[in-house]
Length: 357
Image (tube, rainbow, N blue to C red; front, side, top):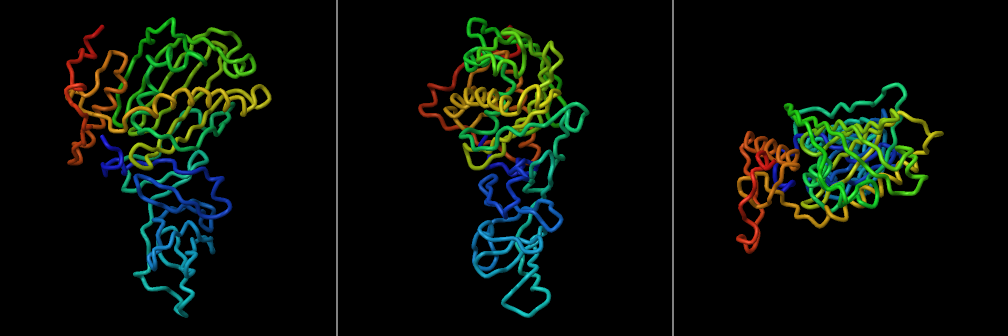
């Protein structure tokens, strides 16, 4: 599956930029290869439109804001959140011609971020547990580009088998490589996964205190996958601490995405400063990216093609692929399978991921 080639993936909301970054004017972003401009309207709500003036194609993101409309830097035309031209300085007409317009997109603010859907959305912005719950705070962690596909990022988020190896310098133990058991329950737009994971904290004591006091502990996890590229994982420790991680991946181009991550925690800034929480998760994500950015962006959804081998603990990723393949097919789309050369080196017999155990 090439993430930018399937129109149905444009029918979901994705976070594109923190609201705080729009205070000083319009900003450019790219989704699915489409350049967009994002800004705040007169009411302080986000708006999104194609980053191209309909007059002479100048980038509106290089302009300014006038009464809640984005103003083209070339000739001063202004456009509101619906894409309508609201100001036309070269004419005395009170209302600019109706043909003076640009394409606008569905845009909302949620959780401190701007969310955009390029087409009529199939479902709404995910409702995340812990948001607004008494005793929980929100910490904004990451907003940066990653050079891998959205599906690779999502599969990794539900992969218990990689912890012992990829994260052996932070909380994994490569002397204990057997992945934790999982219980997975599907729903219409994703699934829930439950697991208990033994972890060994290996960073310095200052960072260890972010999550637990002892070196070894058990993480009780409840993860949710929101199709196509969003997950939330509640991690509960024996101490009662809940660290709820939200990871969102917004496709930019083929093989690149915007990673947005924030957490909800039931502790306080005085107990654990936000900067220490971010430092710990940044170290973990850096370990993931060291491997993920070496993977191929075209992920074969149809596992019967046998272009990748699978094992039992890959079940969450296999379910993701199956559900995404059904989504594509239900909208009359076919996936573009990876072209591997020479193919005989890659296409092979595989173990049945269900019967392997």
